Length: 318
Ligand code: FAD
Image (cartoon, rainbow, N blue to C red):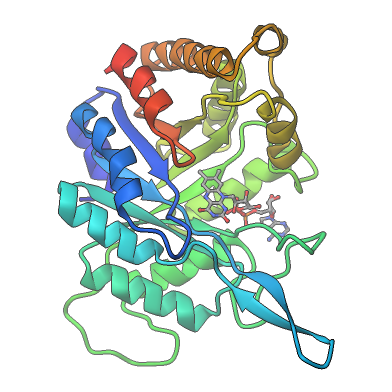
């Protein structure tokens, strides 16, 4: 079922959902299930599965030179979505990236999703590779998430890249895109970023999931500004509980987001990692309570591979 249908069916009740990361290759899927199991009592209608792009590795050759190869540490998003969907009878949302994929590869990913009964996809550009300063698209790939939304919409209208396919069974993907209450790191301004978001929605995106934020006012202002420029689709807040003290530096550096002073001082006064984790949980609960009261359609949590803190938050709210 589409995310938009889940939201409609909930009839104003806020839903609970979360995002998981595929295991590193070589590991068993059981660890992922062990993290999902404790969250299923809160009846998430959907679970997102992230995709990570390729990285270069350098292999030492016998002649002393280095050979550059491409590798993916966490492959298998669509397979994992299918496994979770069938194990738990829940909708799953694979994240589909521009970065590192040709349009043809993307088409095959989407065709697989259709075969597997996956109704939703999250269309994202992806980031630069770790050695790059700026994002560079694959020369046969999509440049912006907007281009990816267009490719998915084309498929929804039966238009494949190179083939004319006579089909009475077109795809009908519900498309999610990313939104940034504190603007995307590369964007010259929040307003300019919002215009880019509107382009994605105008091209056919059905809903938005936000980047994490720690100050709800940023989300409320973002939603208002989005409504003001005519973005009407659901805007789902993404919540991440701080889990380690290092997040105080890491999250602003990677995502260009602000952390409120009181959260910083609460974390800095902790003496153990457990205390930090508890402060993160408490903050996320307070944030979520206010968002619930404001009637957000879904509270979507970034689990980053561990679910104990998300469970504690969900228990206090759902
Ligand atoms: P876009 O919408 O393409 O925007 C990227 C930048 O380009 C923005 O600054 C925008 O303002 C600008 N822009 C857009 N169109 C144009 C144009 N025509 N001309 C000039 N500038 C333009 N990353 C992963 O690698 N894997 C994941 O699974 C993943 N999941 C995510 C889930 C969520 C909810 C969020 C919020 C982010 C996620 N990301 C993920 C991170 C995301 O890939 C990065 O934030 C990336 O840098 C931007 O992706 P986007 O889809 O927002 O890009």
